[in-house]
Image 1 (cartoon, helix red, strand yellow):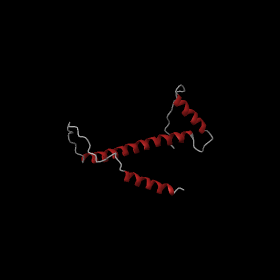
Image 2 (cartoon, rainbow, N blue to C red):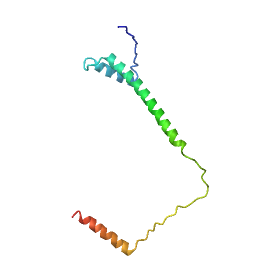
Image 3 (cartoon, rainbow, N blue to C red):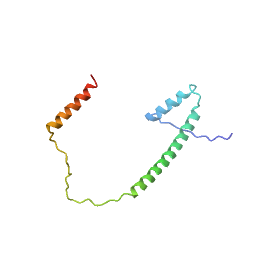
Image 4 (spheres, one colour):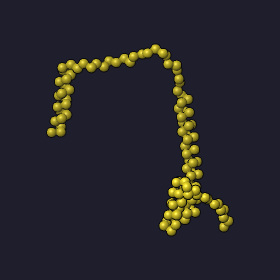
Amino acid sequence: MKEYRINVRFNMENETDRMIVAYLNGLRGTQKVSRNQFIINAIYEQIVEGNRNAVLMEQFRSVLREELSSISVSEVSEESTEPVSDFSFEVTDAEMEESKDLLRAGLEMFT
Protein backbone atom coordinates (compact mmCIF):
# COMPACT_ATOMS: atom_id res chain seq x y z
CA MET A 1 0.00 0.00 0.00
CA LYS A 2 1.39 3.35 -1.01
CA GLU A 3 0.83 6.04 1.61
CA TYR A 4 0.58 9.76 1.28
CA ARG A 5 1.69 11.50 4.45
CA ILE A 6 1.02 15.01 5.59
CA ASN A 7 2.08 16.74 8.80
CA VAL A 8 -0.41 18.89 10.65
CA ARG A 9 0.74 21.40 13.24
CA PHE A 10 -1.54 22.90 15.86
CA ASN A 11 -0.93 26.25 17.54
CA MET A 12 -1.43 25.57 21.23
CA GLU A 13 -1.89 29.30 21.86
CA ASN A 14 -5.06 29.19 19.74
CA GLU A 15 -8.19 28.06 21.62
CA THR A 16 -9.70 26.25 18.63
CA ASP A 17 -6.47 24.35 17.96
CA ARG A 18 -6.22 23.34 21.63
CA MET A 19 -9.82 22.09 21.58
CA ILE A 20 -9.12 19.96 18.47
CA VAL A 21 -5.94 18.52 20.00
CA ALA A 22 -7.81 17.61 23.19
CA TYR A 23 -10.55 15.91 21.16
CA LEU A 24 -8.07 13.98 19.01
CA ASN A 25 -6.16 12.87 22.10
CA GLY A 26 -9.47 11.67 23.55
CA LEU A 27 -9.91 9.35 20.56
CA ARG A 28 -6.87 7.30 21.56
CA GLY A 29 -8.11 3.88 22.61
CA THR A 30 -11.60 5.07 23.57
CA GLN A 31 -13.34 4.75 20.24
CA LYS A 32 -13.12 2.26 17.41
CA VAL A 33 -11.80 4.87 14.99
CA SER A 34 -8.22 6.01 14.72
CA ARG A 35 -7.29 9.68 14.82
CA ASN A 36 -6.06 9.31 11.26
CA GLN A 37 -9.38 7.88 10.05
CA PHE A 38 -11.29 10.52 12.00
CA ILE A 39 -9.34 13.34 10.28
CA ILE A 40 -9.83 11.73 6.85
CA ASN A 41 -13.59 11.41 7.49
CA ALA A 42 -13.82 15.00 8.74
CA ILE A 43 -12.05 16.36 5.65
CA TYR A 44 -14.21 14.22 3.36
CA GLU A 45 -17.41 15.41 5.06
CA GLN A 46 -16.27 19.03 4.71
CA ILE A 47 -15.65 18.55 0.99
CA VAL A 48 -18.95 16.73 0.40
CA GLU A 49 -20.94 19.21 2.53
CA GLY A 50 -19.28 22.15 0.77
CA ASN A 51 -20.22 20.73 -2.64
CA ARG A 52 -23.76 19.96 -1.44
CA ASN A 53 -24.18 23.54 -0.19
CA ALA A 54 -22.90 24.94 -3.49
CA VAL A 55 -25.38 22.81 -5.45
CA LEU A 56 -28.27 23.83 -3.17
CA MET A 57 -27.35 27.51 -3.48
CA GLU A 58 -27.27 27.27 -7.28
CA GLN A 59 -30.66 25.53 -7.29
CA PHE A 60 -32.05 28.23 -4.99
CA ARG A 61 -30.68 30.99 -7.23
CA SER A 62 -32.16 29.32 -10.31
CA VAL A 63 -35.63 29.07 -8.74
CA LEU A 64 -35.40 32.66 -7.49
CA ARG A 65 -34.39 33.94 -10.95
CA GLU A 66 -37.26 32.04 -12.54
CA GLU A 67 -39.82 33.38 -10.05
CA LEU A 68 -38.53 36.95 -10.24
CA SER A 69 -38.54 36.92 -14.04
CA SER A 70 -42.35 36.85 -14.03
CA ILE A 71 -42.69 39.88 -11.76
CA SER A 72 -43.29 43.25 -13.35
CA VAL A 73 -42.20 46.37 -11.54
CA SER A 74 -43.98 49.66 -12.01
CA GLU A 75 -43.26 53.12 -10.73
CA VAL A 76 -45.12 54.15 -7.61
CA SER A 77 -46.93 57.47 -7.81
CA GLU A 78 -46.18 60.10 -5.22
CA GLU A 79 -49.86 60.65 -4.49
CA SER A 80 -50.91 59.52 -1.06
CA THR A 81 -53.95 57.33 -1.11
CA GLU A 82 -55.78 56.55 2.10
CA PRO A 83 -57.11 53.04 2.42
CA VAL A 84 -60.84 52.77 2.08
CA SER A 85 -62.56 51.05 4.99
CA ASP A 86 -66.18 50.20 5.64
CA PHE A 87 -65.36 49.24 9.21
CA SER A 88 -67.31 51.04 11.90
CA PHE A 89 -66.45 51.14 15.59
CA GLU A 90 -70.07 51.71 16.54
CA VAL A 91 -72.02 48.71 17.84
CA THR A 92 -75.80 48.74 18.04
CA ASP A 93 -77.63 47.52 21.14
CA ALA A 94 -78.97 44.55 19.17
CA GLU A 95 -75.43 43.56 18.07
CA MET A 96 -74.20 43.88 21.67
CA GLU A 97 -76.98 41.62 22.99
CA GLU A 98 -76.33 39.06 20.26
CA SER A 99 -72.62 39.05 21.18
CA LYS A 100 -73.46 38.57 24.87
CA ASP A 101 -75.79 35.68 24.04
CA LEU A 102 -73.10 33.99 21.94
CA LEU A 103 -70.55 34.48 24.73
CA ARG A 104 -72.89 33.02 27.33
CA ALA A 105 -73.62 30.01 25.09
CA GLY A 106 -69.90 29.45 24.62
CA LEU A 107 -69.17 29.68 28.34
CA GLU A 108 -71.95 27.23 29.18
CA MET A 109 -69.97 24.52 27.42
CA PHE A 110 -67.33 24.79 30.19
CA THR A 111 -69.71 24.61 33.18
